Length: 177
View 1: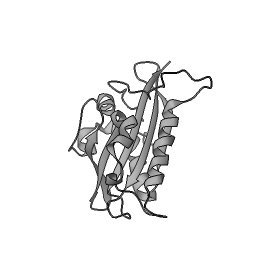
View 2 (view 1 turned 135 degrees about the horizontal axis):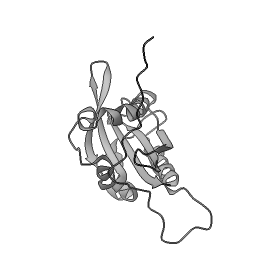
View 3 (view 1 turned 90 degrees about the vertical axis):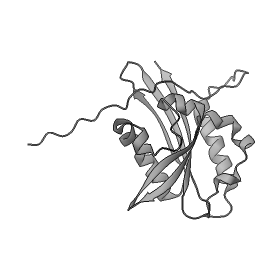
View 4 (view 1 turned 45 degrees about the vertical axis):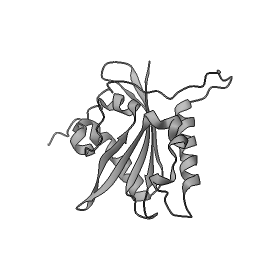
């Protein structure tokens, strides 16, 4: 009987970039990462030029994206035979810290280790295939002890309104006990 391959936990990030919290404490408990993803998703929805059409990155003003800028990545979605590959175009400082470097200009599968890639590539493909937002919120045990709370939002973008040619990703990683 063949032995099934073991599945490893993704490597711990080299740094963390939790969602920013307001200066005034809130009386109600709020998950700021989830609130920030909701706000960006709402902005993306407002930028859609029509029913079923997708917004282009140029529809977003840098000032509108400022609250999330350090935690954003813009990817170019490129067709390679019958699949998509994703090229880093713009990488926020928080994401560069999480990933261990600014990989602007590089293809994702060349920049990230396979153990990190296999765990996330399905989210990117789903955003392209469904032409809709994909969210991921999970707490995963860290190899060094404790856990990492991951919050990710992928938003498909299109220069022509139809075919996905870019993905905008918001990413937070927070160390939890």
